[in-house]
Amino acid sequence: KQGRNRHFQAILPLRGKILNVEKAMQHKVFENEEIKNMYTALGVSVGTEEDERALNTEKLRYHKVVIMTDADIDGSHIATLILTFFFRYMYELIENGYIYIATPPLYLLKKGKDHRYCWSDAERDTLVEEMKAGKEVNVGIQRYKGLGEMNAEQLWDTTLNPEKRTLKLVTIDSAAEADRVFSMLMGDEVPPRREFIEANAKYANIDA
Image (cartoon, rainbow, N blue to C red; front, side):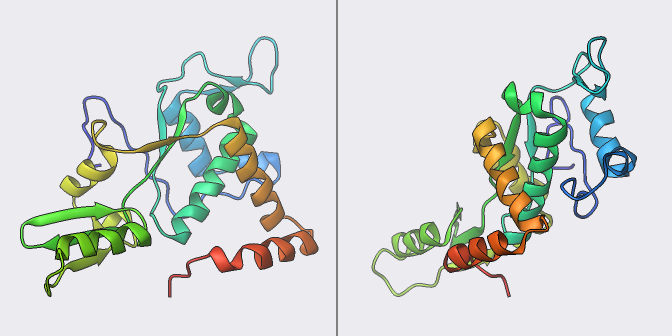
């Protein structure tokens, strides 16, 4: 919360992993404390004059909702859980272009007073060579395993500052794909899950 601009930004911390709505009964979803907090914070509710089960967005407080998770594989899993929830229960927010995903950096590179952030292993390798400029010098590499490893100033510079940050807009297509993959990985059908894991294992970076 210290990294935000309190005049136009609000932070809702979610404790641990959000409920897996793919496997939970609907009444369990609405009883979950984290999910109840999301409804309250956003100002939305369930039920309209036309449809008692529809999402009521009349009192929606924000038109930009940013999912912020760690940049590692666990963070991606949590982001997928949250995306699946929005897709299943707050579809209209995605449809109206209100849901975004933050892109915190994976690395901080340091050489003297030169500090640079990077968002992938490939970018890290390129920047290290660029900062060395053909000389035998040491470039310090700090890998961020979580947002909690950044101080307030770093969080603002990389992830919260509207003038510098990079946000990914969640579209119906991207949310539907996340939902499809999540349904497969978390569902009861074993063969498609095994096929997906075998097909994509070579692309995964495992944090040991």
